[in-house]
Amino acid sequence: MLLARALQRNPEMVQAAIELHQSGAIPAATYVVDLDAIAENAKLMAEESKKHGLLTWIMTKQNGRNPYITRVALAMGFDSTVSVEATEARTNYRYGLPIGHVGHLSNIPLREVPQIVAMEPDVMTTFTYENAKAINDAAAALGRVQDIYLRINKPGDEFFKGMVGGWTEDEAVEGIRPILDLPNVRITGLTSFVNITYQTPAATKAKPTDTYYTMLRAKAKLESELGLKDLRVNAPAFNNCATFKMLAEHGVTDVEPGIGLLGSSLAHAYEDLAEKPAQLYVSEVMHHWDGEAYTLGGGLTYIETSGVDHEYQIRCITGTSFDEAKDNFLPMIERGIIDYHGVCTDPDGKAKVGDTAIYALRAQFFVNRCYVAIVTGISTGEPKVEALCDPLGTVLDADFNPRPVDEVIEHTKRVAERYAGVAS
Image 1 (cartoon, rainbow, N blue to C red):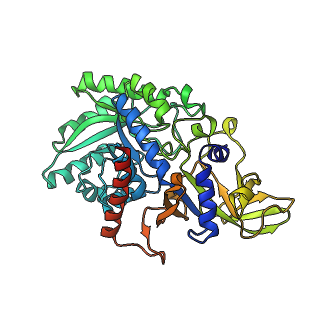
Image 2 (image 1 turned 30 degrees about the horizontal axis):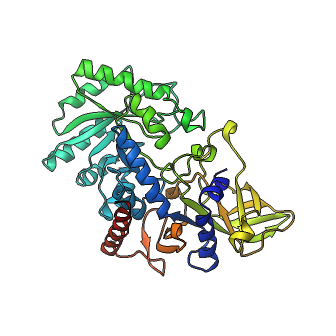
Image 3 (image 1 turned 90 degrees about the vertical axis):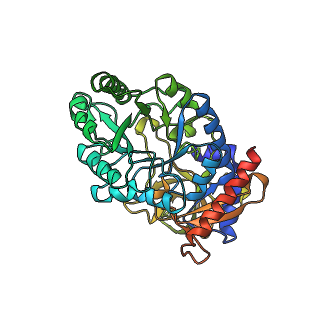
């Protein structure tokens, strides 16, 4: 369904991706990012979130910590960045990007805390007293006070297995009380995940989860019993223009758009939302076997799913040109434990070896082993590969070696300034 949405709303991106692959400008196993669409989406998101008084941080994990995407989103009005783990913070810091919220889905390992605190993040999430103590000691050594958010949950609430932690609602007051004695950390907010239910794919019908209401009840307790004032409410997940108003009405102060910025969430597959499709996975037909076409993997390591009720058949289109490929759909049936190939049904042999294969996926670049091509000029019919990167945000030269950091910083700034100038 995301592929159909891309063909409908951004066919120029599909055409550019095929042409760039067929010409050799990008390798197979590459996510093509339409930076024009990213800028447009970011502007819409920034304007809508500010209309409702929300602080907007770009979630950088989905885009593979890519400095071009992040710099453009900031130029279009996002407030700062989210680094969900230490490795992500290091990449963002390397390229001179502001360090906003660090942690979020996991704590920073204790022995790595001093390095991250030295980056002077706006806020760090902590799940434990031990982690808060490490942040406090690192901040004290630097002569600063570090703001922290606390993670609150309740057993039985809606969450993803392996993405939960912190204090339960019942133990929050007494469990968090000792942190007040740490002089170099300041509790300024709460966070949790997931905050909007994934039981429906419709963003226009989205409602907060029980997990979210657990956090609100804990907020009231902490403010009344511990004297904490005006705690912020950080609510990542399902963040897009269609959900900002609802979130603000329920007391949210911070949002963290990620896959919504790419126009590639589950909601974007089912509804025609404000954000347009801004990325595609570009593969190549490698060989055939027993009536099946094998397309190159590397970008299929993780494909976000959402339960049987809302799943749909993943398909690709194949061909050497847009006209040839646009109606040549092949259903994907297998990608293996390691995605060496995306295997598609092709009993009639419609796909030829060397054809471009285009997928539109609910992907997260940073868990793949492919490339990311940042392309400008798609909206004006003049696509240009501004940069080729690895899936962890490292910008590469023509020989696939890392480009000098200073050079990348200056280039990302120039590219972002172009978009900001057009927007103004």
